[in-house]
Image (cartoon, rainbow, N blue to C red):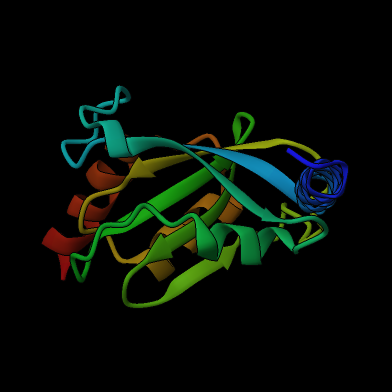
Length: 152
C-alpha cells in the first residue's frame, strides 16, 4: 500500500471515529422495560426490554412518546414510571399525558422508563386518579373503577 493510500485510510478512519464520538455525545440512552399485557412485572418477550438513544436535551414527554410500549390495542392504558413514581399515562388513543408531579425537563442523563399495563381503564381517569394519589396500583385502580361502573 502506498504512503498516500495509507494516509487517506488513516484520515478516513479518524473522521469516522470523530463522527461516531460526536453522535454519541449528542444522544442519551433510555432503558425501557415494558410489563406484559397480563399486567405482570416481568416482561415475557425480548422486545419488552430494550435501550433507545434519543437526542440529548429532548423534553421528557417527547422521550416518552418515542419509547412507547409499542402496543397497538385501542382502549388500553399504560403508566410510565421514572424511578418509583408514576410519571405519565399513555394510550394509543390519547398519546402521552404527563402527571403534574413530573416536570417536562430536558433529558440529559441516562434514564430508565418502566411501562406498566393498566388494562382497559380509561387513560384520562387513570391520569386524574394518579394525580390525586400516585401510590395506587393497577389492581387498586381496577377495583375502584369496577365499583364506579356498577353504580352507573
